[in-house]
View 1 (tube, rainbow, N blue to C red):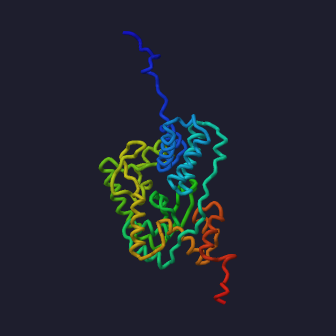
View 2 (view 1 turned 180 degrees about the vertical axis):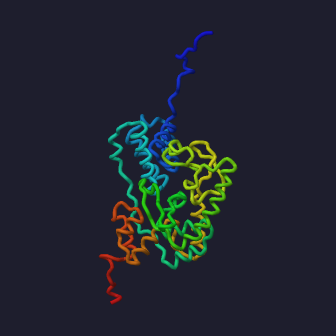
Length: 331
């Protein structure tokens, strides 16, 4: 029998495709699955826009042409255009490892500076009264603790501190952890909800499932942690699903889009004209704390802002500070 011919082209390992390289690099750097899908989509659109040319064969004018097309023909928002630019920066710097100084010279689209939408206390109560079940619990945490929507749906059982009335927010914006308050009025319904979630988890375990996603490859360091109750999501999905990265069948957290639709309907039913979303509860949380006289540094810490200037926007909503003047007409 003749020895295998290792020089044969059929036995030569082909390098991974470009988009697979992008996915691998994003996972190595612990980017979320949502960011991975977004970046891959922008890079794919960039390549198709230029007739499937390889990005390493393109230059500044090609990137500018794509970004200009998004703004002019696509009429996308400035934040969307900047998101596409971030994806291309990641492609060139991290994946292709090409240092292109001209990438830094591409103009960043300027997003308009708008004041956040804030509800009054009465309006918040009107919206919350029209929510129920899991959607009401999540909205209550957004308003009662100033959490972002994805922070709430990704909340783990181990990070709810009933005794200390605290919630530990893991990997918030900028991969930062912080501690915020657990509202007293939420404790009883949240405990009842967790009892139902625990029963669902026990049933999953009996059927051979019960494993949840663990960040930063913790499943390799602690093989059984994914089945422990403390690591489960506080708001689990009703259905099992297949993890797109590993192929494992797991119970993920609830879909944030369902919360968004429920809040939108509640705002409509309450007869409000403000374009309120789940994130509006976070804005209202900060504004109402400042109205109650709490120090802005305290509010900054609860929100997880790295710079107090970000928190200062709520003082403009309150119309306090240098602009808190009385109209001459009212005098």
